[in-house]
Length: 530
Image (cartoon, rainbow, N blue to C red):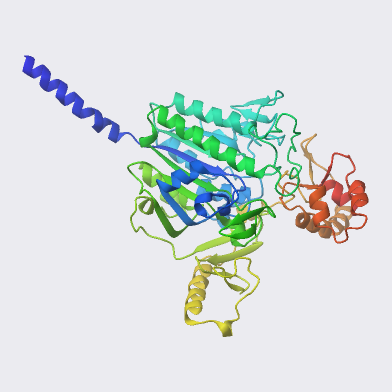
């Protein structure tokens, strides 16, 4: 009997690791706001401190060619659905309810799901749940108050406004840690689209002047083009470190895969040092400084350690990768554009892309603002412009067909083939939902603008609206050009740096700034220009 009891205990002990091995991995996907490739020290950045991300890269896989869309919502739509913007993008700040996201798929596979951070996809309080998330702690779900010091958030269907110097990114990070703690015994998916490092470049709790500082509440960069941006990058890294530490404390780290990327280039005009040169953030542009973002994968014992991959990946690929890693089926009817890079994360060859295709227009509609295909060295636009982006990353010198060598000719033919695969009209269902992009603050640019106070469209006669809209078009375009960080407001610094004449600029700024809040809204700009 004693021998039978001993044998039973041995068998039970042998079953424990088997059970642990069968448990599906946890997934943490971190999307950093306005965070270009040059911001991470491991990538060659020289301006910021990112020790946590550097360590994750050194002990995991770092991608040298990870690309996103040039702006927030377009990237979120691609990342969550694994479809090119050409196929399902509607307009800025919106994801069509008909779409399936990685939240829906993993929830259907039995995962506990949570989203914390920035939403920006409309849908009211029910939106996150509709797209597969059991719980949430978000900013910009039903409104757009300040996100940093004394923020306004929405947590599981309730508004929360803070007034005691609380820090928004810390609050949602704490919620993420609590979610992990509560769900430690079941497979979980945490999608963490961070609020940092988007402008305004406000003080963080680690900045010496945090308590005295006044939050910009989305009105532009604080203290010039750099402001507290280095502090914000450091705090982003610190919050990721807290998440890693929690996973380790709960003994979950070895069963949790972590993926990190940026949602687009760094805020336009933000200066940084990168590999011995000065560079400027290119958010909203079609250059590599608008699309090139950090890409890091880490999963101890499962992903390669210390590997640097030059394979090209983009935001459509993350859903496919997560689903393959978790054994989650992707319904074939979704016809996703993404290609799993799980083999590369494991240190295998995989099925790398020959190039990437980009369709981009924050307003949606039938045609792209720009459309191109590119690989690591060359880029070809649909208008025929062709660049060697490895040597000309600002795209100042288009290559003439007569000057191409055999390598360039082959690359151009390959990229043209990729563009040809995406010819034809967009789906009318998504085209008809297009809305003129009025900046990230959410202002619409069309004549029949929705009145947020009444929730109804303002009624205007067709004959009266048409001339007004026509007159507004040049001013609207000029506003977009001058709104360097695309937040829907012009600060004094932005106004001055983009002024055609510096003399009298201060007086003009004060005239435009009708409500005297220190920033010019889009409505104020258009009204003053009539």
